[in-house]
Image (cartoon, rainbow over all chains, first blue to last red):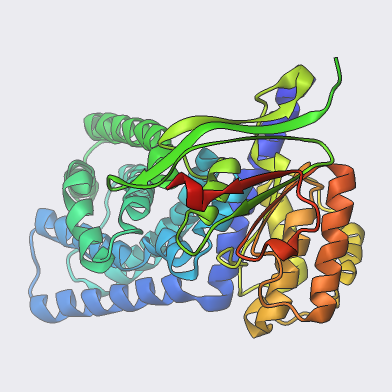
Amino acid sequence: MPGDSTRMSSYARSVMSVFLKDWRSELRTRYAMNALLMFVVTTIAIVLFSLGSEGAPSDALSGMLWTVIFFSAMSGLSRTFVMEEERGTTFTLQLLAPPSAVFFGKLLFNLVLVLGLNAVTILLYLALITGFVIQTLSIFLVAVLLGSLGFAAAATVIAAIIARANTRGTLYPVLSFPVLLPLLLTVINATRLASEGAYFQEAYGEFQILISYIVVVVVVSSMLFEYIWKD
Amino acid sequence: MTNALTLSGKGLGKSFNGRAVFHDVSFSVEEHQTLLITGHNGSGKSTLMKIICQVLTPSAGHVQVGRADSAGDGGRDLFGFVSPYLQMFEEFSAMENLAVAMGIRGRQWNKREAAALLERVGLDPDRDEPVRTYSSGMKQRVKYAFALLHHPPVLLLDEPAANLDAEGVSAVRSIMAAQRKAGILVVATNDPGDVDTPDVMVDLDARR
């Protein structure tokens, strides 16, 4: 129906405009990008210094990679909602768009940030950490893509929850850890399989868990977001 | 049956953490009418305004807005809102703020119309500086352009003359007169003199 397609294109424009607003704002302030980048460099340097020239088993190196990604992401991903709250523009957005359009626009922005963060982290990690080699690239790429989407989805809704709290700085990683734990354990396992040269089929179980996690988090978050956002 | 726009609230109440701000507030206004909301500081004027534009959920009662043939079709685009606590996106210029707002509303962007509106509220549409460099009076003028660009049938003004000089107040009076001709005007103020002839009044001091 023409009315439905008009509503859909209006909704899609709304989602893209929330994303573009945040993206242009980030390009001007570089607040989240700088925080993420500084954290990545610092944590990889710590890993590098602690390992020295000695290697570590592939499961330990896989775990450390995602530890770097988790704590780096925690330093920047909450900005998308915290910034609106600090500047008083939450009410402005509430006037302009339905809650779900704000959620998906912010999710898109966080997804782009996480993909950028992961690309930088992985390249630095591969270049600097002795003994970390990816033997099955296909497993690693799928794990990183699905892991990024799950990460962005959970981080976005948690950011919306903590944005109105007084102790938002400490609350974000504390609240995120239990929610992200199933995702972290699965991507760490998939990364270990990729570094050990497993066949692609051997990682199907991990991919199924990641896809299920993403579906559950995105659906539940989009349903709950209106209550978090409105009052 | 007429197709007039109506805005009504029935039995509205709001509590925060068990503390009642106001209770049992009712009103009804039609197209070309003005609703004036008065009350001292803390009486809940801004809360009631947020409930009317459906950003805040009332603890009791309900708001209905729409035309007679589609009653209850209340949506964000029906409302334009100006208030001291409404903040623009300060890293963008006035024109960029209007473009962002229309995009997030899911509407088509018309730069020529936006430029004419900025001139109407006394701002230079070619000024590229971010809004954070504007004076408080200029920011208030941006808010008027922000509220009017999508031609809302209901215009809500919370403390309409805040931060404005005499020229700005005169522009606001002209905007209020134009809104009365085009739709419904809702004004919340400490100074009832801001509105010449309200059609309906709600005194929140009597609803505590």
